[in-house]
Image (cartoon, rainbow, N blue to C red; front, side, top):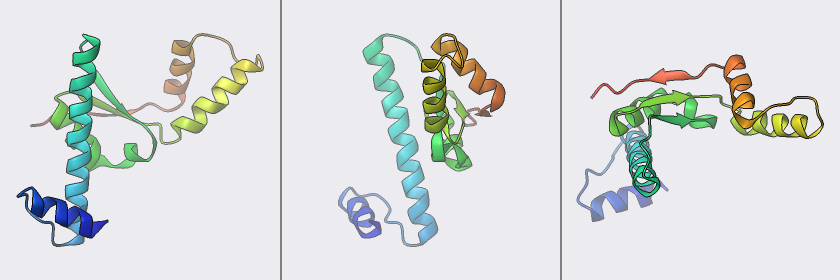
Length: 124
């Protein structure tokens, strides 16, 4: 993959990352740019303004990714929980078994009480 990334950068006239650190930075910058474009398109297609970006799972642990996403989107990023998929799965199963009740919003509130997201505000 590093060779493919370097080749793509060279083909598009972008700086070619030489070190592992430069390579990782280019990957994280690329992800943040893709998130920003996706948010823009989603807002455009839906006709709704987007107030925040939620990053869950492993990416929520990457401070640089979260901050760059906030900077590129101009929106607050809410990061976490790390195990969002597993938590969601447990809650849906618990609701199906009658162990918890409520709407999707109330289940989200329950998760938010247990694991408050970290906030990243745009700085640039």
